[in-house]
Length: 140
Image 1 (tube, rainbow, N blue to C red):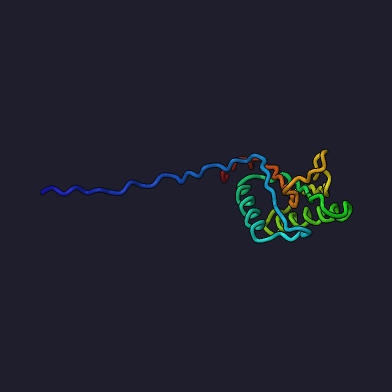
Image 2 (spheres, rainbow, N blue to C red):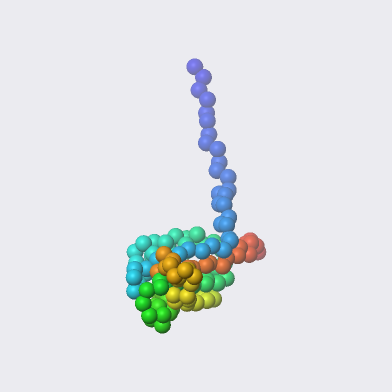
């Protein structure tokens, strides 16, 4: 009976796929008359930060929106608060030292010309501006 010696192959270098570093947008939704970033919104922000990992974040644009109900001035203030709270949530997750562009539209555009209210305006739209990191030069 012949027995063969079999040695396990030596593992080669670990190959990791490079991240795809292209701009993307997420929408963070809020309860009525609220700027609180809830649990589900926080999970979405976590996923966005993870998606941007490995890329250079050159900036983040946050547009706060509100629906058409209520006083237009109050809606503008609320949309500003929403944009600011999203920025704070991103900073708590390590998105710092980047240019944040905060904008607020209030209820502008929340109704069609015929007077119908557009749904899902209780949100902040967040656009991540990404580029690839410079390649590693190696140690010398």
